[in-house]
Amino acid sequence: MGSSEHHAAARCRIFMSGTQALPSLGTCTRQADEELLTAISEGNPLALEKLYDRHSTLVYSVALGVLHDPDSAEDVLFDVFITLWRAAKIPILPAHQFTAWLAISSHRLAMAVLTKSPTP
Image (cartoon, rainbow, N blue to C red; front, top):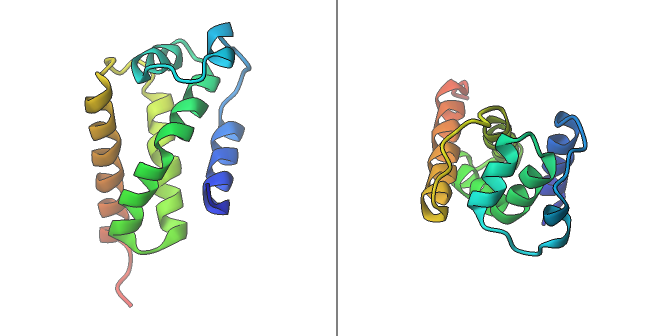
Protein backbone atom coordinates (compact mmCIF):
# COMPACT_ATOMS: atom_id res chain seq x y z
CA MET A 1 0.00 0.00 0.00
CA GLY A 2 1.40 3.39 -0.98
CA SER A 3 1.61 6.40 1.29
CA SER A 4 -1.50 7.96 -0.26
CA GLU A 5 -3.47 4.77 0.47
CA HIS A 6 -2.25 4.78 4.07
CA HIS A 7 -3.32 8.41 4.32
CA ALA A 8 -6.80 7.56 3.02
CA ALA A 9 -7.07 4.63 5.44
CA ALA A 10 -6.20 6.95 8.30
CA ARG A 11 -8.88 9.38 7.11
CA CYS A 12 -11.42 6.54 7.06
CA ARG A 13 -10.47 5.55 10.60
CA ILE A 14 -10.71 9.17 11.78
CA PHE A 15 -14.16 9.49 10.24
CA MET A 16 -15.56 6.38 11.87
CA SER A 17 -16.62 6.64 15.47
CA GLY A 18 -16.94 3.93 18.04
CA THR A 19 -14.94 0.80 18.58
CA GLN A 20 -17.57 -1.89 18.17
CA ALA A 21 -15.90 -5.07 17.06
CA LEU A 22 -17.13 -8.59 16.61
CA PRO A 23 -14.62 -11.06 18.02
CA SER A 24 -14.59 -13.00 14.75
CA LEU A 25 -13.51 -9.90 12.83
CA GLY A 26 -10.36 -9.63 14.84
CA THR A 27 -9.33 -13.27 14.52
CA CYS A 28 -10.51 -14.39 11.07
CA THR A 29 -8.01 -13.72 8.33
CA ARG A 30 -10.36 -13.83 5.35
CA GLN A 31 -14.07 -13.29 5.78
CA ALA A 32 -16.56 -13.13 2.99
CA ASP A 33 -17.42 -9.64 1.81
CA GLU A 34 -21.04 -10.43 2.59
CA GLU A 35 -20.19 -11.01 6.26
CA LEU A 36 -18.23 -7.78 6.39
CA LEU A 37 -21.09 -5.84 4.76
CA THR A 38 -23.44 -7.25 7.38
CA ALA A 39 -21.04 -6.12 10.11
CA ILE A 40 -20.87 -2.64 8.54
CA SER A 41 -24.67 -2.47 8.57
CA GLU A 42 -24.42 -3.16 12.31
CA GLY A 43 -22.03 -0.21 12.72
CA ASN A 44 -18.75 -2.12 12.92
CA PRO A 45 -15.85 0.10 11.73
CA LEU A 46 -13.37 -2.81 11.77
CA ALA A 47 -15.41 -4.47 9.02
CA LEU A 48 -15.09 -1.33 6.88
CA GLU A 49 -11.36 -1.30 7.48
CA LYS A 50 -11.10 -4.93 6.34
CA LEU A 51 -13.09 -4.21 3.16
CA TYR A 52 -10.93 -1.15 2.59
CA ASP A 53 -7.76 -3.22 2.90
CA ARG A 54 -9.17 -5.80 0.51
CA HIS A 55 -10.59 -3.49 -2.18
CA SER A 56 -8.87 -0.11 -1.95
CA THR A 57 -6.41 -0.90 -4.75
CA LEU A 58 -9.29 -1.55 -7.17
CA VAL A 59 -11.14 1.64 -6.23
CA TYR A 60 -7.99 3.76 -6.36
CA SER A 61 -6.88 2.26 -9.69
CA VAL A 62 -10.21 2.95 -11.35
CA ALA A 63 -10.22 6.54 -10.10
CA LEU A 64 -6.60 7.11 -11.10
CA GLY A 65 -7.29 5.72 -14.56
CA VAL A 66 -10.01 8.32 -15.06
CA LEU A 67 -8.42 11.28 -13.30
CA HIS A 68 -4.67 10.80 -13.84
CA ASP A 69 -4.14 12.64 -10.55
CA PRO A 70 -3.16 10.72 -7.40
CA ASP A 71 -4.61 13.29 -4.99
CA SER A 72 -7.98 13.35 -6.74
CA ALA A 73 -7.99 9.55 -7.00
CA GLU A 74 -7.33 9.36 -3.26
CA ASP A 75 -10.31 11.65 -2.63
CA VAL A 76 -12.51 9.34 -4.71
CA LEU A 77 -11.18 6.35 -2.77
CA PHE A 78 -12.13 8.04 0.47
CA ASP A 79 -15.56 9.03 -0.85
CA VAL A 80 -16.42 5.51 -2.04
CA PHE A 81 -15.73 3.99 1.36
CA ILE A 82 -17.45 6.81 3.23
CA THR A 83 -20.48 6.24 0.99
CA LEU A 84 -20.35 2.56 1.90
CA TRP A 85 -20.16 3.41 5.61
CA ARG A 86 -23.02 5.91 5.44
CA ALA A 87 -25.19 3.60 3.32
CA ALA A 88 -24.94 0.88 5.92
CA LYS A 89 -28.39 -0.47 5.11
CA ILE A 90 -27.52 -1.32 1.50
CA PRO A 91 -28.60 -4.77 0.39
CA ILE A 92 -25.94 -7.37 0.96
CA LEU A 93 -24.52 -8.22 -2.46
CA PRO A 94 -22.69 -11.36 -3.53
CA ALA A 95 -18.93 -10.78 -3.70
CA HIS A 96 -18.73 -10.35 -7.48
CA GLN A 97 -21.59 -7.83 -7.45
CA PHE A 98 -20.05 -5.91 -4.56
CA THR A 99 -16.73 -5.67 -6.41
CA ALA A 100 -18.59 -4.37 -9.46
CA TRP A 101 -20.44 -1.86 -7.26
CA LEU A 102 -17.10 -0.57 -5.95
CA ALA A 103 -15.63 -0.21 -9.44
CA ILE A 104 -18.75 1.49 -10.82
CA SER A 105 -18.98 3.83 -7.82
CA SER A 106 -15.33 4.75 -8.20
CA HIS A 107 -15.75 5.41 -11.92
CA ARG A 108 -18.89 7.51 -11.42
CA LEU A 109 -17.34 9.61 -8.68
CA ALA A 110 -14.15 10.09 -10.71
CA MET A 111 -16.18 11.18 -13.74
CA ALA A 112 -18.08 13.64 -11.55
CA VAL A 113 -14.77 15.09 -10.34
CA LEU A 114 -13.49 15.26 -13.91
CA THR A 115 -16.56 17.09 -15.20
CA LYS A 116 -16.40 19.59 -12.31
CA SER A 117 -12.70 20.34 -12.81
CA PRO A 118 -11.95 23.66 -14.52
CA THR A 119 -10.28 23.32 -17.90
CA PRO A 120 -6.73 24.82 -17.86
